[in-house]
Image (cartoon, rainbow, N blue to C red):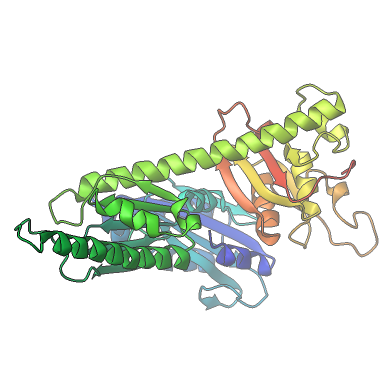
Length: 408
């Protein structure tokens, strides 16, 4: 997940306005409906006191509804220079605007001291970098996908030298001819594997999906490096243009969905293992977040459980994986300082609180503040099922880079 653009949003302080507007390009009058959604969003912003220049800046970045999905636009007001990728509008900037393909269920308007990025993070977290390779005894078609519906790279190549087809003609040279064909298959498989390996490395693919000729598949798979072969999933499919693309696509989507589910399960299992160990060492049973915080962090050795402990770990740049349960209350109050790691549930916990000349704490939504700190310290952010028994307390937790100290 490339979050560099998101990190740039925090480079200049100010007020942020975030708009999500969804559209189904196949719906009747999709363009008209999309315009109405934007008019509703602008009317809501006017009610909240957002000035007209900023509203115009947002509307100008609404994009073409034929793209489909959800359009997210973040505008900021401040006096600093525009260090994002958007257009410089003086005091009003639009440093972030993009489509989220495949998400057509988000319509949101938010105004606050930080941008509302949870839907973007959730969408990014579900986009699995993967390679799809269709192989046969003649060659391979390789497609590499990152975070867009269309592949970022693709190659189709016939790599097996002739002859590559057994004729079964018989005769005194048949055995030698067939041995030559099989040797050519192996050479072709080696070349096909090299193309797959290169595509997987180029995008740091997490999954490699193979389909094709049952006789060619094991030959190609055997030529892949171990680190790539360990990520392989095999589905039914063919290089032939036989109208089976829709069936292949459904299988690919199922593989990616299963991968996401397995990853979430593994993360929560690690989290629960660390949390259970900490509770056992502390002699504590299941506790609410307030009790956990009162224990001074001693209940979390390799994990932080609940908003208070998680915020404390982020202040120490200690979090490797921030876990946010789906549906977690984004409007829980929190406080932030000028540094990206300065986040707390109580402003007294911020660095330099109460000291002369210290920056005044700014109120912010808890989830927005946690995301800012996680992005600023290079932590991964994952949305996990809220219904899982291993879910963090109050829907907020973290896996840590190193064991927590005994006090927060």
